[in-house]
Image (cartoon, rainbow, N blue to C red; front, side, top):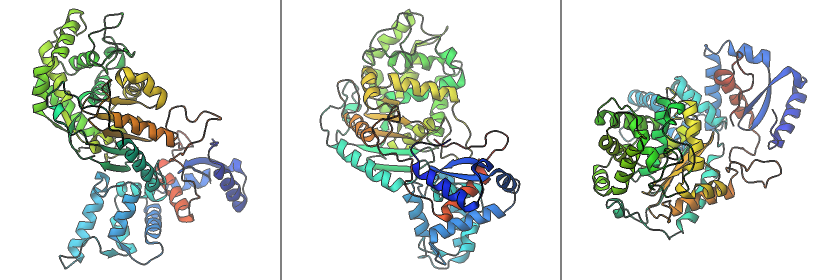
Length: 508
């Protein structure tokens, strides 16, 4: 199906078919890196039947080497690292684990001086040896055929950095002080990290600084609960509407239920539904382990001082919990004290913008972490869909409507200054500044989001016909080179094409 945005593809199609002397009806459509190519079905089927061999993999590895070495006989490992980083793939990416092992083994056998490091150059045969495992080869094929969701990642991050600097100029707002430990936060702290659905990553500012998730944990806890049970069961106990009130308001809907799971009353009820038969320690460990998997096993911890501080001053949450108990909002035999402790413990889970961005990208990627090698589904599709829907309508407290109007993206804020945002099928990001507005949202975080959608077509309704055109980072805006085009084709043959289901592989 042709995209109205890719006029350059029309020219590419015409020239390609003219060159081959064949009619378009003989070809199957594929979309990769925003360039449409037309590949004869019989050719694809033939290639697909031989992917168990080494020919396609060897050719792909050779093409990657040609692209990286630019025709030279050797390739410096430092240059490889720089090229990966330029495309958003960090050298410590868990998908490169086997590559690291292959390089280490080779260096142990071939280098004789301790000062020989990653500056070492390798030839084509050695490079092909490094790419012998499928995880590394698949990643390299996608990255160097410009097949990632953001193909020109360096240019994209330059603009992101400008938006970040613009948001940093916002100095108003104040640090939350109703929880004594949060009042100690540095008001100048400002960090951002993004992670695309292909695992492309970029961080700036205080992105590795640890902080408590507070309410930013709520969408994840809700998603876990829905994945474990179902939306039908969870929403027997709460609604799906924004409350229009402050996040800790002592208020229920007309059915005497919490308005939604992203405000305090709803989140407390959600906690009562997660593994109620287990001990509190086991329930907390279960959710924390789940969160760690969504962060690709990166930094997820717990701040006991914040938990104790909030527990000693959480009079409003105690009032809400007793009110919920009076209105029979909990399942039978729920322990109010245990449930409230569980809720406050989850609010005190700590992470960094870097790790939380990976969890956000798991939501953007339909519940599958882009960084985990096994690609096992962590969250059910319905769970992710419903979570994003609620984040879009209820995630910013009683500022949710205005945020949806101005930014148009699923988001969740927390009083520690975190702002979790998901761009479905593209990326997730976490930014954090403790300076809050009167609604409890990060001032700089909201300003960054405004700058982001002012520049890029990320607002839900930016792609309407006849709308004002913005930058689309999902487009490469140039033709692929012959090597990139061939590599793109091999990637499709080896990893994407499925003759028994759908003849077109979509990556929108």
